[in-house]
Structures are given as structure tokens and as C-alpha cells.
Amino acid sequence: MSTVAEEVGVHPATVHRWVSDATASDAEYVPTDLRLMSATQELLRDQDYSQITVEEVARHSGVALRTAFHHFDSKRELFRAAIDNAAMVLVEAMRRHYEGARWPDEPLLQLSTFLRLSAEAIYATPSAHVLFRDLGVPRSDCFAERWHDTFEQAVEQILARCAAVSAVDPDTSVPAAAHAITGAMRGIHAAVFDGGDPAQALRIIDRLHLTVSIGRAE
Image (cartoon, rainbow, N blue to C red):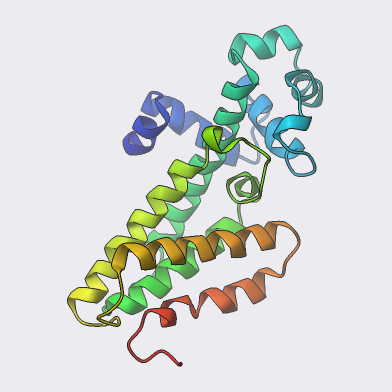
């Protein structure tokens, strides 16, 4: 939680509350900031960044416009918070998925397991769609990029272990491969959130590690 809080720029207690409030199904009271973030995430299912106003978010969440601006100084800050919240909820879902998994000893199979478990957690987290779909956010303000960078770093670390035991093609550039695999995952996830079949997506993801293995098919 402390690492996520540092990334977002908030106190760890705030991260814990956001995650707890967003995942509690029986909570009667939902904090105003979370209501606004959830409304933003919902509106982004059918509209993009340029089409949504703070007024619409406030109306959708049942919050007065003045109150909305009390919690978030601008539309940019509201959208950033909504995306960061979705990412934090997803990180927690992924953590739970990883904890209950049986990890193989072979690094290449660890990569396959990591990609599969990540995808399962992503598809089980509806708000995660804001991290993968094209929201029409200007590239300079693409708030989700740092979360994808973190995932790419994790893939690169596993690939480095694969390379250390000669489990990948010796001509493979580990950073380039990590970037390509992360890009492939993003595209697959975007397709799922746009209506694609999650089961088919998982079957494709189960073979992604073969693209860097020595025994890959030509």
C-alpha cells in the first residue's frame, strides 16, 4: 500500500480507504470522493474524456457541483483520481490472485502464470476498463501510463530471470520483449472490455510466453 500511495501522491491510509470502500459490497455509506470517481468510471464506458463534464459526473453521482469541486479542483484531477482508484483496486485484486497461486519453479512458466493471473484479475475488475480502453485523453495527460510502466517492469524482471537460465532466445532483447508483451496484453484487455470473449483472450495470453521461448514455433 505504501508503494502505491507514493506513486499516487496520497497517504497510505487514503489508499486503504479507497480500496476498502470500493470493494465492500455491503457498505451503506460511500464517501463523496469515491462516488465521484465511480461515476467517472461508469461514464467513461460510453463516452470519452472530452465529452464528459464535471457537471455530468456530479449529476450522475447525486452530488452537488459545488461539492464536487470541493473534493477535486478540476476535471483533470477528478479523472486522474478515478483512474488511480481503478488501478489501486486492480492492484489489490491482483495481489489476492497472486497470493493464492502456486508458482512454478521455471522462470518461463512463472511468466506465463503471471500473465494469466493478471488477466484473470483484470477481467474480474469492471472499473479496470479505464486503464485499457482509449478514453480520448491527450497523450500528455494519459494518467494510466505509469501503471502500465509498472507492469512492464515486472514482466522485464521475470524475463531477465528467464534469460539468466537460457530459457529465452539469446537474440531476445529483454526490455524490448517486455515492452512488446505488455503492449500485447493491453491490446487484448482493451478488446475484452470492448466486448471480446474473456475465455478466448485467456487462451491467447496462455501462449504469449511462447513468443520468447527457445522452442517457439516458426
